[in-house]
Length: 162
Image (cartoon, rainbow, N blue to C red; front, top):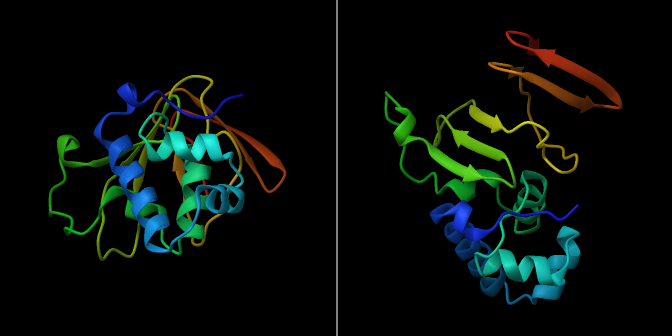
């Protein structure tokens, strides 16, 4: 299965991620091949991401961020603090691969990093990934299939996974 999303569908966020990836790589004077190998992706795919022609899955973005000693939240450009009221149009959005949209609900100096994921039917992260901290998942519509520590879960409307 090929990872990515055509840039025209990903819009400005794809260009911002591309800019971040290029800047981080050039600042550290690293080759495409070096970064691609460290992130476990092909040179061609990383090149396409850096040219805004493809977008990467959340798992790939996490690996790229980790390699560059940063956090996936940096792709959202979270420099400005969260307003007291965050309207849907004010959320920071990351198109994280085909059918996966990640919306940051608060950013900056927060104890919690709340995200809203919109996942199209049969879409997913593409692969597993890990991160520090805790999380919960609340299904607002549809059904979610999740593999966690070799255990599979099916969560439906209103059900919570901790």
